Length: 428
Ligand code: GLC
Image (cartoon, rainbow, N blue to C red; front, top):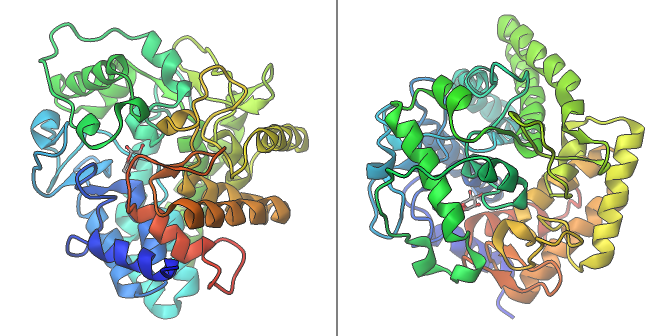
């Protein structure tokens, strides 16, 4: 058997584009925001300097209003749609999309600062002002007037692109009749059955058109845009990242920004209950305008441990869902509920196991005294990679690899978390 550690290293090298790493060739040929944060964890197992470079190059794409885009376009690429000519953001030093992605960055930076001594702290301090600005962007531009909770304007911003959670918001919006015709590229590089439907895609592009037509004024996009939902994924990841950013502020003696971050944390702690769907017994996404809840357990529902929120009862109910789902699948936490009619085990965010979500869920579980379950998730990821290789995501029932091959975050989290050659058993 070819050594999987060597294969993972080779994938990261192959996807390196000179200081930043693309997720996989052709399907995703640019730097993606949260991908880079997870990729840095893997790079740091080999080369701390290169890991920091990954993060620094991500921050280079920060827009003037503080947003770090979901994709940084350093060039155009015929293999990808919608590229920079469609987004037309013109709002920062580099081309990027007009939306963001889950803010994992501060947590990875804090992790490096804790584990790499003085050099880690120094590099973290240099990035701190821009990360703070990005978090401020979430708490101002993405916190709508009508709800005191961070929200999202586009399913792509959540990183869980076609999860059935978003069907409520998509159903409530119309496709813009003036949208130009376009040609999708994703279905040329991946099996169309595993990708979002055409109707979903038309709506995704209509939201982009709205942002572009309004000059990427993020306040307008949030408060008047076609889609506005609250995502437990972004909410929990940001709360966790705010806690990690506060830790950094305290290390550096930045008292003023520490108070600002504390106020975000206090507000989020009291807003956590807005995600609790009592009828369903889980933290779920909800539509801000109609107040309608999603009814299904997604992998984002399981991130409450990572954010350290939830009453004892809420956590018990969450764990009960996770046990029920584990009884219906073989490997890890699936992206969608196998008991829901919309579950599809190989369809992107409608079922597959995603390594980065499982990593964060397990990290939260092990911190909150559920080490056994966390260890099972790590073991399951190891097994699917041994079975199928370094895919974008995996069928949680058969373990088959889905969509993109030679995928960077899977290789990185193998090196940082799942590989048996690691001496540690808890998440990085
Ligand atoms: C897909 C995923 C998203 C990821 C991107 C690049 O769009 O849904 O989460 O960041 O691919 O890997």
